[in-house]
Length: 389
Picture 1 (cartoon, rainbow, N blue to C red):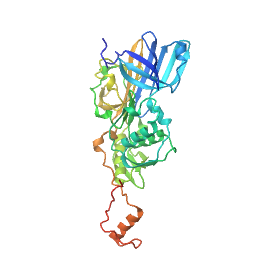
Picture 2: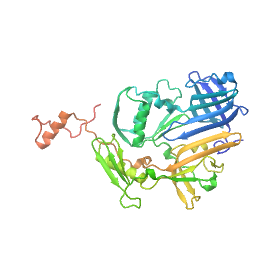
Picture 3: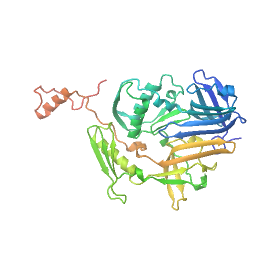
Picture 4: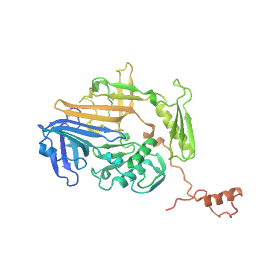
């Protein structure tokens, strides 16, 4: 009996079906399946590959964008996407598929949209529904899970002037995170709400790699918004002065720019640590985590002595790669430090926008200062108008 979720004890099956009819074309068996590899990664389109023995007449019927591939582990769906590439040689077939976010670079923005201090999660969800709602080959729009990011967006996009991937890239620059997990699109810090048990050296077969990347260090950040800017400097530090300029057109208040500059410096004032369980090493079945918990964004307390010093901190999963073949299942995981933007409680409230027309603003100015174009003041004019309904 196989225990669901325990690492190294998975029994895999792969199903290929027609996208629109749902008719199953082929399914692996113990005798036909050779290798299955699948991934989960933050802010990226992931792929899965299966190498199997298949009748040539069935293999040659597979078509990219026409057939779907689903990977099951102990009868539980762990990966789902659309076939992108097939390689057939005799009875050996290698099939590669991409998850539903592959449509981001294949769909234009279909409608004019203007956003004024809206949550980045709401912006991405609406833009994805607009662009991918029609002919959604993988059912991505039907399976969206979202959590507010408290990253406020002021921006606009015109129909057919850019691809959906351009919109998503803009939101990523603001700090929004997303991933596709088992065919479900997670928008915002959804997985960051969950923390697993601690992982130590005893749970890894092989060497843990600790990476410190100095190219990402910043001790003085200048954030430039829409007509405003903000700066934050960490002060005295052994690192010295390492500056950066961050563009954030969605910010409309100097305070917002200062807060984002502070978040940038807090994340990067020392070389960020990244802990990897690389290829060749793997998490052991004794690790106190299950395959269902290994989702990008989930927090994992990690402790290791393999670098000569104890490194112990709560880190986040950024990438998971699983390979299963006749010899067993290997699970490789990459962890990174927790992003400041994932601590939602510390993020600011949205800015109060001035919805008045230029004429109304001039009237208000003349009322308070006695200057203007000569027009009489409007009695009871609010300083900040209510947004139109």
